[in-house]
Structure formats: structure tokens, C-alpha cells
Length: 130
Picture 1 (cartoon, rainbow, N blue to C red):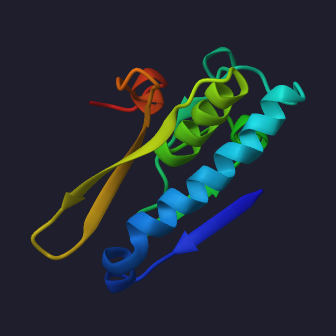
Picture 2 (picture 1 turned 120 degrees about the vertical axis):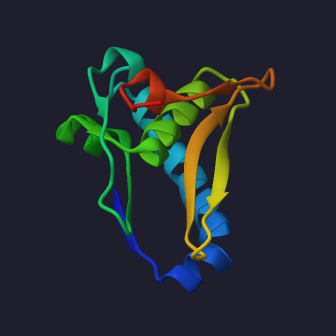
């Protein structure tokens, strides 16, 4: 499954967080099935890396596509990890971190909130600069 999203700045500000959260939750369900059916390895054993999306674009891809292209950005990596944790019966969630800029542009980073409340950042663990 490949979902490529191109949003204008007003749209990002109005619906970006809600759209991203809903889409990534659905993608995590797809990834859970891929993990359960052994179509993909565990995220941290897969040799994929963090790869930045093009500016102004957001691409949500399932674990099979991440594996094929050798990596993805924070949203797809976190959705893979949440699906994997769901397959292990852990109640993890997608966690969005928003950052606003003076020109009105908003940027988000996606991580994983584990069942114990801790935050796991697959992107940082897979090569994203700090």
C-alpha cells in the first residue's frame, strides 16, 4: 500500500494531525498482518534505514514497500513498529509531535508510545540525525 500525500499549508494546519494519525493507524493494522503472516522481518532486524521524504510531500507506505526501497521516514517506520508491537499483543500507539514555524508551516515527527508510556523513536534508532 502506497499513499502519497501532497497538502497545501492551510490544509496541513487544519487537518494534518487528524489525517496523519488516522492514516498511520490504518497502516499499522496492515503492518500487523504482514508481521503475523511473516511477510516482513522485525523492523530492527530488517536492515532498513531512515530516509527523509521530499519537502512538502508525505509518503505513507507499508512495511513491504519500506523493505523494498531500503527505508522510509518517521511515519512509515513508526507504523511498522506499532504493527509489530500489536502482533506481539502490546497496546502501543502512534505518537505525533508537532512543531510550528513562524511562517505558519507545521512539521511533525512520528514516534511510538509503548504500553508502559515510554516513547520509542524508530527513526533515530535507524539513522535519523538528532
